Length: 396
Length: 137
Ligand SMILES: [Zn+2]
Image (cartoon, rainbow over all chains, first blue to last red; front, side):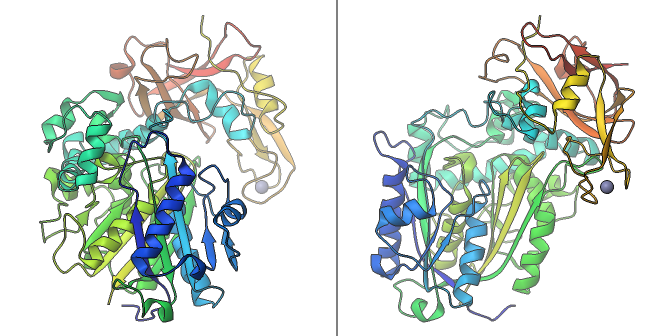
């Protein structure tokens, strides 16, 4: 394993409410930054690096820094959709290692639910946009869900994967959500039909939103946000909680190509790089925080990261196998995931938050003695232009 | 008559493609230097960077690579369409394009991967550009 200890997650906070009413995205960001710094035992003035994906009303790294009242040495405005926070964590790691900064903050805030965004069921490109991609897409009404559904359709065709198998992802994730009070409150506030554990049959019986994706294979639309503080080893020695070290990262993009394989994601490029840097194999991972916009996103990314072979994910996840209390497999999305805890649009930051809780021993669905975690974000649209950001985390 | 959203211009990459649809032609750009097909159309070769491209006309036949049937879309033009398909079509000339399969009774039952299809230019109620869609052969 990579023994270099160059930067660690030392402070985290997740905004508890998923239906905020009257709170702005910027309010959420500021509250999360303040509380994550408290979690670390650091103060406002310690921050010397700001990473921002342009969410919130301020609109980017310059404006956020000014709003915060900070003069950081590093501003990074990487915006690659839901995986922005894995990319930013990777950048913070190398910026700190290069001596450019000591205390970095990543933050996210969104009021997608209150503002009633139709993230999944609106067309991906809005009429009115004139660019090369939009012009070839808007006449066809490809919703975001349909884009992912086309990946599932091809995976089922090539490998015989079934909805019954992939339902295991929803089942395990909901089990975890029911143990997380914030997720239970989220499902209650957002008026889920049943705030309870679910079965494979429940997933199969839920309505089809875009063939072959069923409702219980799709993430929710919620409000929410969070913040992460990443610091140098010198700073991490004096923080309140045990440090969670970044030991590997990978970044990649993928897009539609005429001879491309839609069942392979950008994770097939970012994953091996991250595991290579970390000097570990996927089967050593205790906690798999994998972006769950849809079941198929998790399925494809698990294969591409090397948890199982391409085409074999059906058996790997069936029956809720990736639960926190099954020691024979990594624990998947133990916070309840986007499927059952929160998805305000860009879920990547929550992957880092729950991975950190697990490696600190603070999760509601704690894997005993969790030592290694992967946070893998998938941004953009899995069936066409998308990103993969992989971060490997280790505790001391 | 259908009313799908129209492409918007000025947009130089895709304008020749859409102008050709008025003659019911499915056109695609090819690099004259290395013969790479550039699809979605752009004004440079994605393989060698050359800007010396030529437009060719596809025979319009291909196979369904993958598809989905949209049951819910809140956007104008699609709200009232009922269940409709979206699909990636692999054209015989060797390029993949996003489109949809039409001319079938029930899209949830009558489309399958590997199905042979032929392009059809669907006239729209408003707007000058017909939309290329595919019908089973
Ligand atoms: Zn070329």
